[in-house]
Image 1: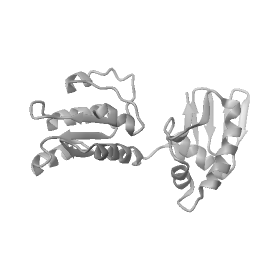
Image 2: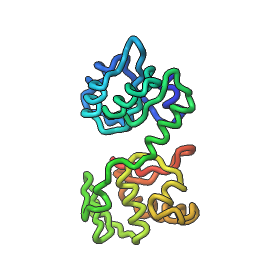
Image 3: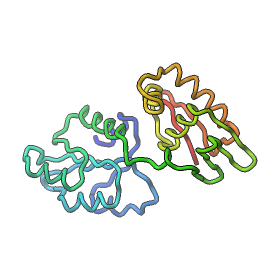
Image 4: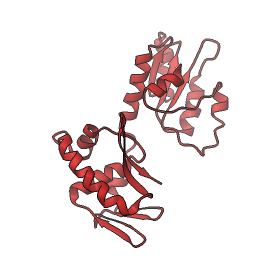
Length: 211
């Protein structure tokens, strides 16, 4: 059921029957969120939450049967959970929690502060507002660079046009303005494909795909 609801929220998942097994993931895969379902026969202790939090800084949602016990719920939050939902849970509540957690800003990104970022063959130079890769080069206007910087700080994630317009330039920016700029940005990044590109997927929005 949890895996099915994750798919309805627009994501993909991997599952493990036991927490101890899940903690054995070798770290080669990056997860954007962890969801743990507990039961009376398989409780999830504060120590386990702390250990899991130490292994990953991504959002952690706990589905807990002890939700009505205020003290236990508080301990779960203190241990590092970002969201605690009661079991049996309402499907829409879990979908909403997943969506809300993924929209929250994470740790402050160093991308807007960096003078230069090197990713594989590509060099992003904020002082010159220029991207170079081998013999390829492209220069960007201030507003184009602001959009590219947001994309660069959130690679391989999908955002709607309204979300991108607001978060890159402010809430007063229209979707029409965004679409004009993303067209220009996409054109300027064409020489760097397939190393990076702006992609669109129906029902999800726009994403900065980067190898």
